[in-house]
Length: 156
Image (cartoon, rainbow, N blue to C red; front, side, top):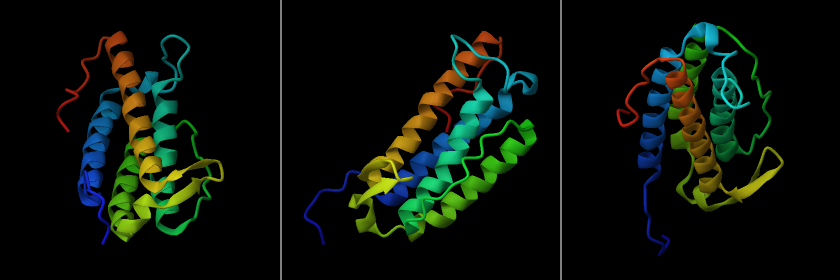
């Protein structure tokens, strides 16, 4: 047993992340389909491209932490919103299945994600969560610019 204090349990971290994922899903639902891969502000990427980036990082990062398999296809192709939501839901289920397979000590273990991003597993996982929050914020700006009221950010 480690003498280090634990700020958050692995289970609480997953619950926190899944709350963010539910909110991001509602933002995807609110986005006009015809603008998903075309609308942008200030030369930023369209929200659909940002969503596909989030989608391509979530399960592969957790898979890598679980078993060291850092291979991924980085599928970021444009697709219909219904398919994106289906993929989002499948990833959510995969995260729920994979997460309990992470041994507690692995969160402190040094890794190199995808052959290029070094750090302890917990930092790599927090990066994926932070990346989602950052891109979701861009989505909020896009929705407001399109005249669409986004879902409340505090309802996860």
